Image (cartoon, rainbow, N blue to C red; front, side):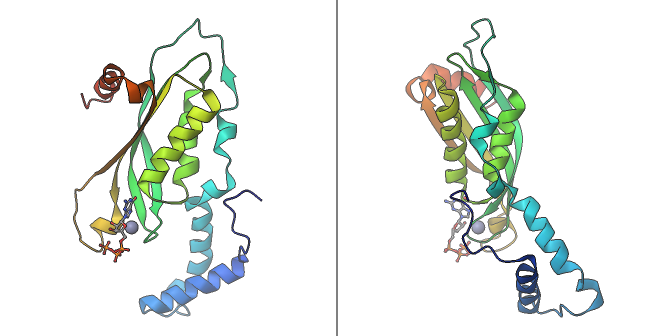
Length: 196
Ligand SMILES: Nc1nc2c(ncn2[C@@H]2O[C@H](COP(=O)(O)OP(=O)(O)OP(=O)(O)O)[C@@H](O)[C@H]2O)c(=O)[nH]1
Ligand SMILES: [Zn+2]
């Protein structure tokens, strides 16, 4: 069991019963025809929304390529769609992540950076923690010269409830290594992602 699994994971039937309880809490009747299949669908949806709990992000970065002719410039993957879930209200956080690193000798297949984003996004999150987890995983596994992660997103807990402020973007960033130390490197990154 990894450290993210809950020791008392319920059965699917127990999870479906919880959905029926929430339907009643919403004010509807879980016994009416249109809702009969809903607990099954919701519990199956949860397996997708929260698939990250069954993933070990480090393994995505385990296969690296060293034959890149000494490429030691910035690699940027920008506008990676992020679908996450606010841990306070359990509603979607939708946005984009920009991930950059400067290899020291190992580079990874670029899709793996997006897989790491997903593995942490598909959990109950706050955006600050999500941003940091992605950056720290890349730093730990690739030991690059630097890592930068920027996430821009909309929180449905702010748009569809609560303060109801649509069009608000939350921006978070984690800068490690040379991205933290060097203004020039940071500026280069911001120009690549059209924020310079
Ligand atoms: N820092 C941070 N805050 C978040 C994130 N997602 C949601 N929140 C905020 O978490 C806070 C939870 O505040 P509470 O006062 O406990 O909850 P609440 O009564 O539902 O608050 P309102 O959303 O203001 O109605 C809210 O201000 C949310 O906007 C996130 O990723 N990072
Ligand atoms: Zn929230």
